[in-house]
Every structure is written in structure tokens, then in C-alpha cells.
Amino acid sequence: MSYLANKIVFITGASSGIGKATALMLLEAGAKVFDFSRTHQLADELSHPNLRSFKGNVGNETDVIAGFAACVEAFGGVDVLLNNAGIGVLTTDLSSTELDTFEQMFDVNVKGVFLCNREALKIMKPQKAGHILTVISMAGQRTNPNAPVYCASKFGARGLSSGLADQAIKLGIKVTDINPGPTDSNYWGDRQVPREKFLKVEDVARVIVFVLNQPDYVLIREINFDNMKFLIP
Image (cartoon, rainbow, N blue to C red; front, side, top):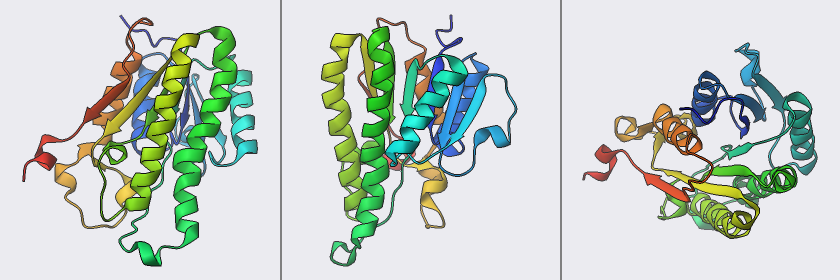
């Protein structure tokens, strides 16, 4: 049995990577997908009656408010928010890291999650139902000397999500953290990394769909997972 049919899912960054893989799986399961992306929109390459796209930046309050309004206008509401958009930059030498680099990551990874959570809650609270998921990553639990600012932003997102979970459960709203290990996506750019040991974006998407396909009374607070090859020295 699928619990996803006709669910309205608002996804940030659904135009590529984990977001795109998840959007495609949700559409196949019968969900209605609203893609909120900063650059390329999924609807530019895929025509589907249950897909809408909106160009916006999660770190911009005006864009986020307009995006949720557009989703409500298109589909009639929001049942699920998937905070997927994220940005990561290496900061191997903190003493030479520019403030702009810090602010870019916190604008997307923390401020963006806050803004989207806030607007989703305005819709979900009257419904007394809803589900907010955030793709945080294991970087929100274990630090990395090459990316301390990125880890800090993910620790922040995890703290925000955990605190929200305690509030939201009283409202009938579920909150789940999705924490994959290193994943083979555009995040890595041209960096020389062992991609063969990483998770695939489809692996992460399947976990997200699994969580969303649970009955309303089943609450999964957090899922941590890695590619076993990455963990073996």
C-alpha cells in the first residue's frame, strides 16, 4: 500500500542530485511534487501533470514566502516539506576563510531550513498534520577538518530540526532528519574523492521515500546511513 498517492510534497533543490532522484520516485508513486530551486527547474526537462517548479533562493525570505504561496495555489496545500537544498565549501584553513563563505553556507543550510520550516508550519498547523524532513548528512554528527564551517552549518540544522520536532509532535506534525554519509553528487565538483565508496543519490532517495511511505502514526525521528565501503579502512 502506498501512502504517497496525492501527497503534496514541497522539495527545495529538486532539479538535481538527491532532490531530483527523490522527486522522480515520488512522482512515480503518485505524489504531487513542487520543485523550489534556485537555478534550473525540473519542469524544464520533465513534463508531468503532478509537477510544478518555482525559481527561488531558500535564503531569501521573499522567495520562500512566494514559493509556498505558489504551491498552495497550484496544488491546494502542502503535506510534506523536504529541505534538500544545501551548499558546501571546503574551509581547510579557517584562518584564511572569508566571511562570505561562512555566510553562504549558513544562509542555505540553516537560514533556508528555518524559513522553509516556518512557512510550512503556517500551512500544516491548521491541518494538524504534515511531515517535515531535512537532508542534513552525517556531517551534522561527525566533524571534518577539511570542512569545519560546513559541519557547523549542519550541526545548526540538526539542532533546529531537533528542537522543532519537540514542538511539532504536539501539533500532529512529524519531523525527520535524513543523515546520509558521503554521496556521489554535484556537491563534490572536480575534487578527487573516492566516489566508488560513496552512496548514490538514488540510495538516499529510496530512504526518503521509505520514511514518507509509513502510516501517519509511525514517526521516524532520524535515519543515519553510509556506504559500508566508505567505513572500511
